Length: 229
Length: 229
DNA sequence: CAAATTTGTAGACTATCATCGAAATATGGA
DNA sequence: TCCATATTTCGATGATAGTCTACAAATTTG
Image 1 (tube, protein in one colour):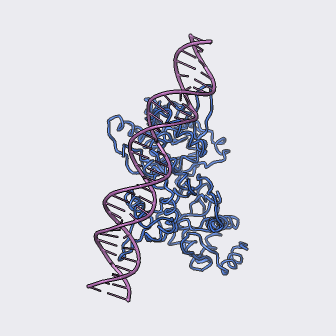
Image 2 (image 1 turned 60 degrees about the horizontal axis):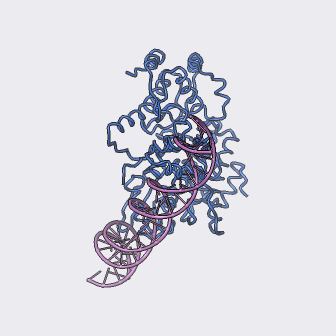
Image 3 (image 1 turned 180 degrees about the vertical axis):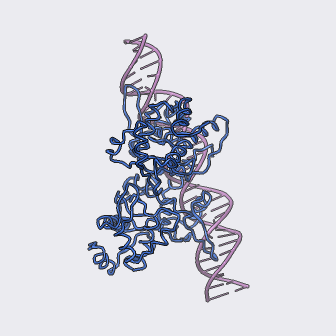
């Protein structure tokens, strides 16, 4: 290969449909085997292996070996906002089947954006926190109000340990499907984890979409006045 | 083309070395002709024309016609942080000639990041504004202090008109060459424009690198205590 | 009006990349 | 130890994209 612009090398990672599918699968922050990634991308394990070798070479995934299984995961969260912002400028995807439509709707409704909640639910939750004066929007960040501190402590969030983390506390993340901001950062991560622990939402297999449980529907309404029905 | 991931479509724009070069040229926010872009990318005008057609189709550039010249420019600033963040994950570029080394140094030293100042100088200026209590860093934003308001008004910045703009006021932008933040947003734009107007810095031909003038060296030192020698 | 310049289009060519089948390697289980 | 499973490697193949030459179209200049 000739002397090539490094921008092209970086983006060529995403510029193949198969790799793009695999990368979006990896956005659920879980470990995935070669076979799983092959299935989700609709290619053979040989093809998946070829692509994973490329991503290893360019240091965007890491691999852990357990017996004959290889578990792949993103090396760093830095990829996440890049991928989300690339999705913001991506053209609309054509839907060719009912299954694809359902999957698309599910992803748009509620998904993990690596370690925080995104989609319609993520944006609605963020809006609700702002409307209830728990958070205040300030350009590309959210500020936690005093009212909000009380509420979150009461809700079960350990603010002290979150504040110790060396990362953005309450960052805005531009939601590609809603084209508005949802809450990211350490607080976004803590809230997502807490929602899983409370079982208001659950993970699904083979997708980074998440499902609101019956309990969740009830509790979102009771605790946050969010009507999800 | 088969049913393709929209992420791949979006990123394929950047994933070709020629297009990547053209896009980085366009990052200087100026209009460029087909011939200019062809030259900066090292291809024939026909090849440049082919690539520009693709970018037009995917709505990232706009074209204005004046006689037989076609002037291309980015449609939106939204591409800029995406490109900068992609450059953050890009591998280091190999330097094969002294000229390339000089160009690389110039770009790293001081460049326009579409409409604000980036590079070593951009980060140093930002640091200086923070150290002198003109700005305060707050996660992904800067806050203008009262001291800072007085300073900037005195410096010749029209804060009132900037505040009216519907965009981020003083956003952080991650500098790919320094791997630290420089000031972006409406304030970043105003300061860059003002530095051009004061002739402390000047644009160069065929590059988005900017040059600090002799006057600029003097004034940066006198007004901001920045030693650029 | 002819020549020059800029840009776009068509077609051919080349290089590169992604794919899979077959086979090899590594590991686990019976 | 043999068989099964997961993954990687190799080689072949086909598809696609980017390139340039040649030419056409639009506009400007002399």
